[in-house]
Image (cartoon, rainbow, N blue to C red; front, top):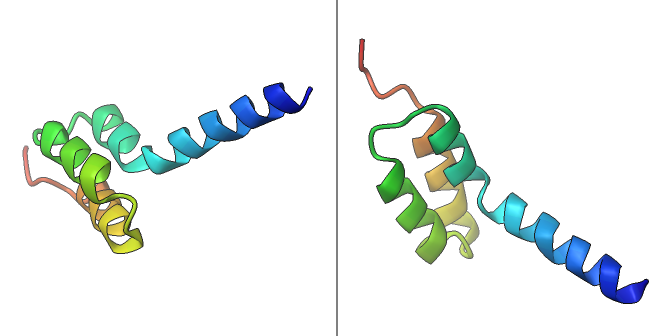
Length: 63
């Protein structure tokens, strides 16, 4: 049971870590690859994660 909880906790942590990337792909952002890279490499810094999230949710001006 402990192993299952540990795996579940790790999976939830990964999902939370990649929320900016998930949002970027869900919104069809033009630069979702760049958002993923920033999230992957700088997401462990809280400010990097916040910047990636803001970048993912802001309007890209298309249309």
